[in-house]
Image (tube, rainbow, N blue to C red; front, side, top):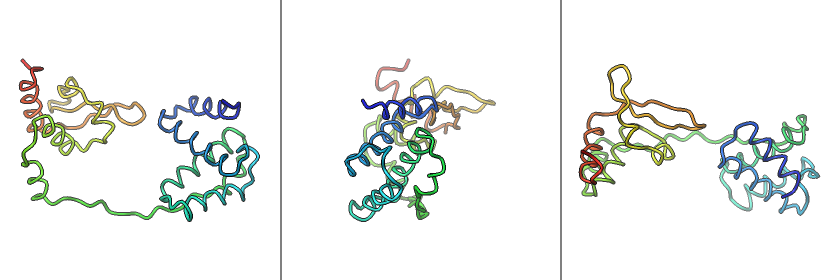
Length: 188
């Protein structure tokens, strides 16, 4: 591992970056260095901009992906190398706002009424009823369903950045979880 990469990793750890963010940033900077066949600390602003254009125009990367790469390069240049005056030379593009495509009530009902194993139904209904993020759903455990707050059942969720969130639990979801636990042999 190069000393520069180690400095960057140390700076990200000190700032509490998630493992996934650390991996993404290191990978983005590594690809920049590989593209120019040069250490990233020696690259000019024009070379960085040329690489970002290359990602957009030749590699057809999404604006979101290019912005993530820009953020990684900004972090390296400004926070690790201490060249904060270069921040404005590493552009971030506007991401067009798109409205999410929502299912109608009939489509949701048809999806939830479709034949499926109880485990899949429980997972799907919990996801839909609580509006959790994918990562939060994968970390959900049985003990997280029994949280009471102000007399209302809540789900305790390990959110982004390790923060706890409490989401109201729909009674039907709780009933389905109980049925699943009994069917799977985990309940009383």
